[in-house]
Length: 453
Image 1: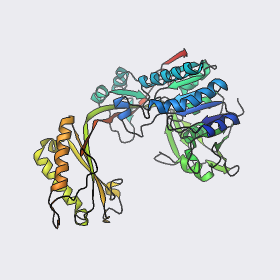
Image 2: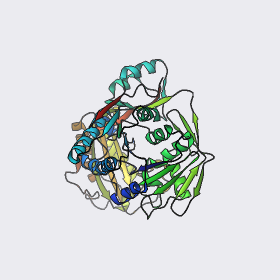
Image 3: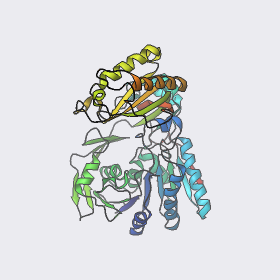
Image 4: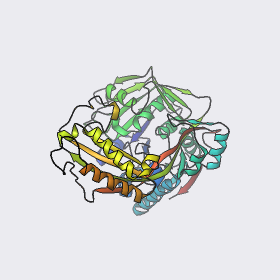
């Protein structure tokens, strides 16, 4: 067993920007690996449905260039997970091509492993027929048609495929993976060194977000892992990892604070401890990983469900703001009289009232407080872009010109900052597949390709 392992996470999301000074401070302090996540479902399904990357190619190049330099000059292994954002096979190859181009320009040579995560649809149909697919959160039952209609379907890679590569090829320089459970590569490296699962899963859960657990929130973080604990230190001297900031971040993105489920089991944190080593470093211990009887991976699939057009503007008339709900209800009624697609559900219309309840909707406790101005965004989704444009145009005109009780001006009560006033935003995607699938092996469905670049 390795007594101590040091992992540098340069940023919580590849492409969001890595401060070179803090990155090299971490490298100079001595690290055994660099691991960075580059994907998420946080932006919604469009990355998967439209094949988009979460940042531009140029943004990736800026961050990856720093890491490749350290990987070549200091011989520090690099792992990039969830390539491109959605982690499709095409996005894995996109990241490999970028690494190849940057390496050629600087004269670097690397041994690289690619782990792919796209899933064969016939396998999903078979597992569904066998009753081995269940909902994830409120996703409901998976319909066979959703499998066929999805543009792309990926499965979240757990720790085991990374560990397999690291064990089979201990001389590997770079791993680029498809869609991965965010803490998986951190956990995998520790798994191959004999550390306790409760320690490394807790560590991975925190540092996959970079130094977001620091105060103030930062980017570059170093984790030092031992048998029964791990230490966290941000690489920006102006930041601190305190017991409070680290414990608070452990709660991030989870439905309950004490049990964090993932591929192959759940991390139990009821007995977790957070202790200050000094003013900038915190030691964490006490996590317990409890394996599940059956290993499941999360499936993510996106479908295109229509096309969207929006308009945006502001209202400052207190008379109108005070009766805005009934006013917008009349606008909706007028639109439904013109467009039967809104009545049938073939098209949809939504209003977002910023400054009042656009964020929390009906749950907003101050919903009935009348502000001095509000921003209004109208959103129309329809089967075609042309129909979405037509409904949105008609609705925007109604918002601008409809009458209301107490009105003191016959027009001009809706200020529109953009011209043209309607903006087509293109295809609309949804997660049509967001389910858990039992697998016979945590590694078999994730093919690996080795290469030298």
